[in-house]
Image 1 (cartoon, rainbow, N blue to C red):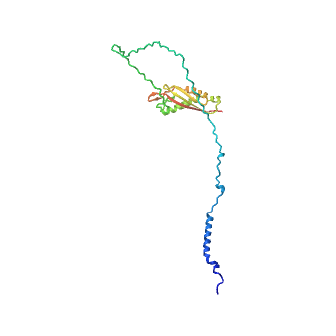
Image 2: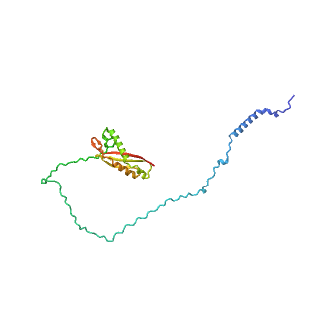
Image 3: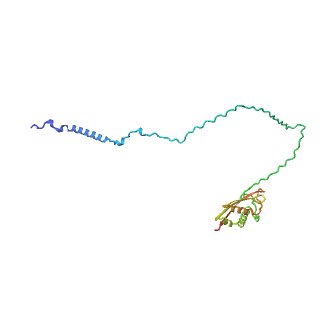
Length: 239
């Protein structure tokens, strides 16, 4: 029995070809869709530069250059030039020779005595070999004499200083007076200086230190020397 279908009407005979073409077409469309990119026009719009909108910048003048005035004209030459003749006679000074000849009398010069001037050497109280000796501090070694002298001076100042003066001057609280003086080569007190919160206290400190008794001068290498001494005076003003 013969088949009734037309062989040309068989759809399945080219199915593999259609499948390959369809698969290739789908791969192409997929690749195109993946690589396809879009851009926003607002992001790539770089605009347009209008040079007419730029105004010319005005630079203010901060300093005006002034042209210096022309120099004054030179003075006019005098019409008539007077010539003055120099008629004054100048006496020449004759310098006599100071060289001695055989007839010049030679005068013998006696011996010239050169007096030695003793220098006023100052040695600090802390390093002097033999400290100045306050009356009543003759005993003991150098360290004992230093301590005795400091105690004697402190007691003397406490006894003679007028502490009520600070209250009379309107001062209050703790007062400090720095006093510096020197004990010279004869043992006398010289060069008294004071620094205090009020000139009245400085004057009182100078007065009291000037009343210190004469001491035995300090010695350095067996010679009497001047010794500077500093003394702080501290007291409390009673309110």
